[in-house]
Amino acid sequence: MSDTDTKPRTTTRKKVARPPLYKVMLVNDDFTPRQFVVRVLKAEFRITEDQANRIMITAHTKGSCVVAVFTREVAETKAKRASDMARGEGFPLLFTAEPEE
Ligand code: TYC
Image 1 (cartoon, helix red, strand yellow):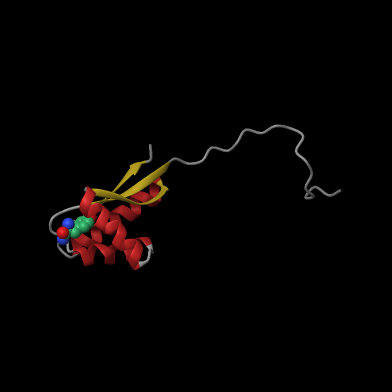
Image 2 (cartoon, rainbow, N blue to C red):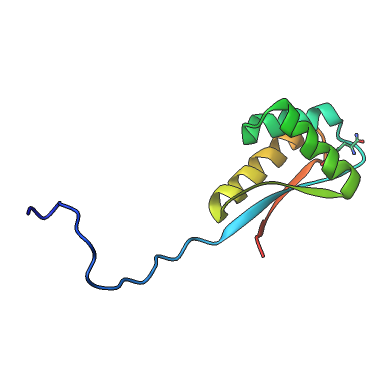
């Protein structure tokens, strides 16, 4: 049997820890147009028009909404890129990254 053949493991091994996950949150405001929020969501998070609309409406009615969950660096990068996209158009739209409880 060669070294690469699979065989039952005879020793125990600790499970590898998963990296902590971070939520990207969409925060409501009174100024950013709904259609612009949807456009940013689709562009940065690669979701459908329907999914983007649901997330936008949830943030609009509840104050904020989870967009998606990633490792810390990916969540922070996406939150910043999406917020910067809005800032470039003069809107206060805000995305944040926060640890999942
Ligand atoms: N509340 C905004 C409006 O009525 C739309 C909006 C929705 C803005 C969600 C931000 O995260 C947001 N034009």
